[in-house]
Length: 411
Image (cartoon, rainbow, N blue to C red; front, side, top):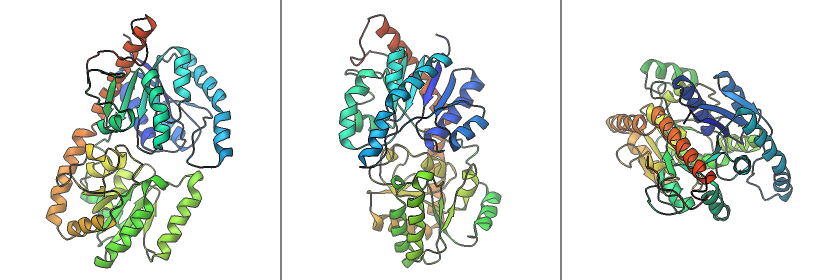
């Protein structure tokens, strides 16, 4: 087969993990000539960054399901479906795409457009945020329509699809490809000179720093971070705290509430910085990285791989598929979701033990280099595209029907 032409559909306009992954993939595919990837997403910061990075971007309005009980919001979303599907169908035709890559479970407009156009569909399950009822509703649709499913870690396939990626029988046998988000360990690498410079820039020189790489959105658990910060400061009053994350227009009130709460708690010196493209530099100010995401939130967080690639010991809640990247006690420390006391105890122990921090940090970097290698992420995507195209071709020839599975080589 010729190299796949992929239309990657993203419904969020901000710059987050899926957007950064698509940037890295598109650049690698273009350099290697292994695939052509066009990204369809709404106008916004992500479209600007991807375009500046040489990615073919098609900006268009796309509705997305919102975490609100307001029926007016959800009705507007549903009313926009026909237009979204029509616009995506037009892009499939104009780009010559033979694969649609759907970045996430809940916004299925791209799946409908792919099915109508008769092209292959790769459906990605990226996190554990969707409500259980919605997962149950969409599970049979994914099983019936997806030519290949990609999940951030094997556990997500089991949790959301009830499918073991290694299974040789069942509706998606041989068509589930786990992957981890890419992190460039050449860019994210420890550098003492950069560390000293950014600690001075952020005003935390000479202090131990606990920080988190996370955009200011509810799923990232900043309230839990604040609770833990207050508890840690009781035993380590010298600790400085750092948030590296963007504020989004739709979450402006939430972000402001967090900052005001930090002040009420006495954390007036909390450093909050929108890192832009400087995550790899600014995060080097951190001594211990925290991940305090909500219980139903993550898959494999890109930020965890970035912190680990920088050689930072990670202490976090065991959420989503994080344990596919972090081995407790070897490459980081994990505590049960919401366990503030456990998080504080583990962190205080690390802050008091430089050798332990260095040992965990070195092991964390090695794990990130192995699990989050960009070339591995690209290879998994290319394998998924080929599995999907082969399955779609067999379906078109009447050899099988979507949802009944094919025996194809596993990754």
